[in-house]
Length: 504
Image (cartoon, rainbow, N blue to C red; front, side, top):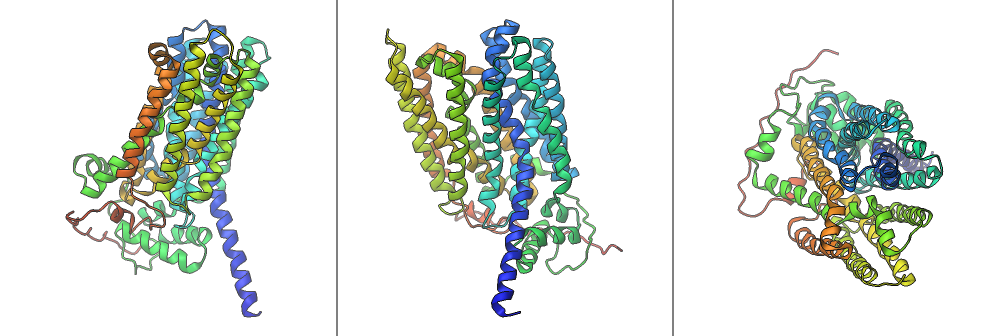
């Protein structure tokens, strides 16, 4: 075979491995479809639930937000569980928990059962939001990490779109069956996900933390672009864990199995200056992702559209489908840009578009509220600004939040650091979901969006000052350096992990 022929064969082989890494990340990210579906379908189902069960506005707010409040439990425990049983089986646990929650919601004999189902499903959501970005980041190469770590967000958007479609398709069923069908159908993808996990490999980084060097090498050879790249990545991971790069054993005995011992102390009680900055960036980016109003638009879009003058359920549901389509399509923009333009530029551009859209939406809704006449132009502009808001969110802050937080923590702190971020994210999501109706009743619907715009300005300043660029940085060796400043004391070098050869 000629030299060019060999190069062509190598290129094809590399391309196949990249596709394999993409497929693994997509399957892992598919758990996020469940969370997105629940968000999308609940926006319409709440209208029918309130009518069928005679629920008050307060009960509806609790119903909307309790899932994310309970996701705190899932997210805070998922990190420790994923360090113990592995990233792959944590996905199975999350899917099984969500299946049980969907079953209870689908039955929905009364409001109490509905709340119980939402709580259980919320735990599954917590698992999903923590584990999908971590798995994707740990299996991807440096050049594709941003793209693959964005997959959970596009799966969330696909789920939201499916939820909006389910609202539209099931809206004409008898009231007693319609909203139950909307909620119960989520059981199907839960089962499909749990079964598909058998096709995925375990995270190579988790395997190295368990001393399973041979298994980790096998996975890296399948997801890397070349054998040389796989060996380099394996060496970096071994060094991060504390195993000698030159160790050639297939299995080593690791005296500390990295099941998460002492991590919370290193994160919260005695963090190094770089880890403290990483924690600040994580907390801030997760808070601002929801404090800027995305939950209000996604969960309460039919109510917002009704305030703008779209009166019929058909008009409202068709408009929400448009929102779902735009949200899904514009995530592709982020996936294309995040590894080229960098995280900071994408985040700041996204926030700028969101702020302008929020101001426009606030103006339109304020005009409508004070006008005695139906304003067609205001209805059109309200839809346009809602579409531009979700498009701006999806092309930046939506997916890049998960990319950024999944890659900045050191290996030993990554799973539980990510779980802490998810807990904060769900707390903010819950707070926004459970307070929006009360908020707009207190300060008007337009005033609520002006408030979100003001928070967006604060978020822009925070992102600019506290989030350094991470594009192209090696996950194991360079990321902590990004958050290191002059004058920081260098942490003492970790002692090499004690190893002993294990007979195979």
